[in-house]
Image: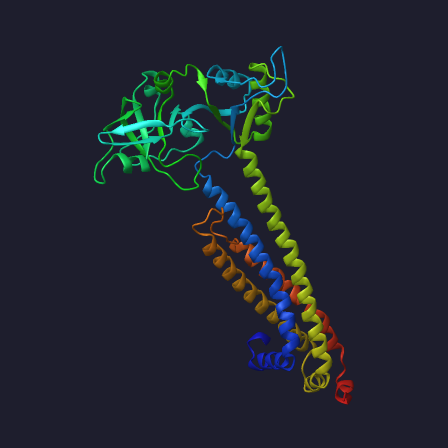
Length: 419
């Protein structure tokens, strides 16, 4: 076969040496295209992975709602009325918004400008945020508890148990290094609580602090006399639900429950994590598509440059080609020689572009480690890389047909007369 002949490759490399500068410039044009594709699509994947990793413990279709102050007078109430969410709101929302899969009322002492709880154990003490929670919270935001421990369960709620889950920092500050906190007691605002778990904290892995303490919601309201008050609602919609529409429904129903003007946009605050996920995902997909368009366009431009170089090469090798034809070279052999040279240059450009792109992605990945930038494992799927190389081979073959046909069309007698 032509591809396995030694003289074939000698001619290819000989042609490249004769046009070093032009070949180098054209090769750069082709490799730049696939380089852009690899870097942009890999960056998009890295951002997507980083964001998913940063919030992997929180349900994708989740949102949070809380009460604020009214900004519009309504139903006899003045502007500036403070709204207070209640436990009954949970039942009402469940019945009126069927897209809700999980809903967890939460309350806290020590966040949003409040005074933290005073916690002590023996001679050690400190102030920490105290959260009142229901077990359903673990369905919305995964609670990573160390071995031998557990999160709040339904029995804790029903029996108003004085149990708590402490954070890693709380354990470090209240217990000695070799001491197992499980089963031990601490005082929260002078009331003894039994430690039933230690929660693993991951920097940037969601919400909260490494010193937070969780206790049953029912115990919290007795300890701090909060009645049926709720600080905010954590809500997770079903996977097939439109989380943006769910957010609108939740806010609309809360406005009805608390007699808030429908047009009042300040009274009920919210944060839609699902919408943010969708935006990041859409941005990543858009960046991938952009990389494909820009990359392919640049590759095509570079491949056309290769075709131009080969046309010039054929012109310069007219006499050589004439001699080959006169010595018995068939049109298919001449055509194959030119096409093989085109494919070779295209493939070399592609491989170099892929390698450089992978190196740049690796550097970016290292530079963003241990930072707040949500960027992790920027990769391009192997099928996409193979597909890009395949497209380059096809384009190289097609563009090589033009100079190849030009070479075949040269008559041996005319080529031998060429000066």
